[in-house]
Image (cartoon, rainbow, N blue to C red; front, side, top):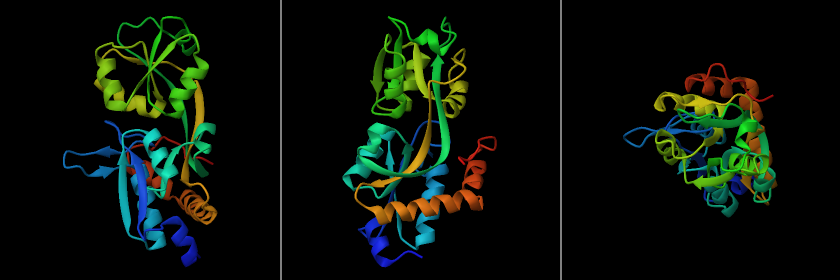
Length: 242
C-alpha cells in the first residue's frame, strides 16, 4: 500500500506526469504519434498502468530524445519516465529496475562498404547519433577513431540516412528494424557495441517515489502487463527483462 506521503513525493502536483520519447517508428522504448497527435507505445501503456494503480490523474509529456526526458526528470518537471540506464544519467536521476535490455548497433546506407562494427572505428568514418543519449556516448567510447555527429532525433537521422549523409547511424536493434523499410538498400550491422537496460527513473532525492515505481514495474513484469504491452505494440518476439 502506498501512503499519502509516498504519493506526494512521487507526484507533488497531484497528477502523475509521465515522460515518453517519440520516433517515426515504434520500438520497445520509442512511442509514436499519429496524424492527430495521439501518442501510443509500450512506455505510454506502462505509465498509464502506474497512474491507474495509484489512482492518480495522468499527464503525458512527450520528448524528442532520451536526453530531453532525462533533463526533465532531473529538473522535477517530469515525475517518472523510462530511459536507458547509464552512469552519466545516474548522476542526474535515480533509477529503478529495467523492463527491457537494448542492444545498440549501426545502420549503414545503401552502397556502404562497412561490414562490421569494428569497421566503423576508423578515421574518416562519420557516425550519426542522437544527441545526449546512452547510444551516442557509447559510440564515442567504442569508436574513438571515427567522428560522431549529433542530431536532435530519429526523424533527422532517417532523413540523413536516406540521402547517404553519414556513414554509420547509431540506434538500437529493435528501432533500426522498424526503420529499414524506409531506407532501401540500407543494412544493419550484426552484433552490438552496447547492451543496457531501459529502466524506470524518478528525480533524485525521492526515495519513496523510487521504491513506489520500482514495485509497480516489478509487478507489471511478473503479472504479464509488460508482456502484453510488447505484444500490443507488435513486439511479440522481444523478451521482458528478468
